[in-house]
Image (cartoon, rainbow, N blue to C red; front, side, top):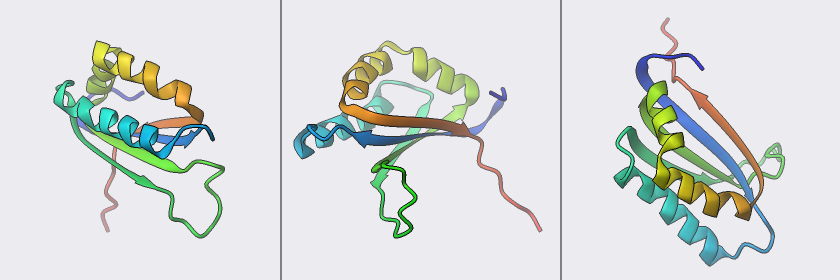
Length: 109
């Protein structure tokens, strides 16, 4: 991962297990969003469900986007005890997961 300052997006694509109820999913999303209040380098959290008509989602149904101040901030987040505890709750409910971290780049003409 490229080091340094500058906004970094942490994207998690998820497919919940079939036996995970909508109420459980809602509680997990609230728990994920609540990490912002506990982990200082995590600046924002947004999520959504797949709405594409292209059928290229490969089974992933939910997208979770976290914003960090730096790649070091993501490392701090990953190691943070509150994140570790939440991950131990979330991950067993997922059939598939994919994580990508990237630095948003504007194209200038």
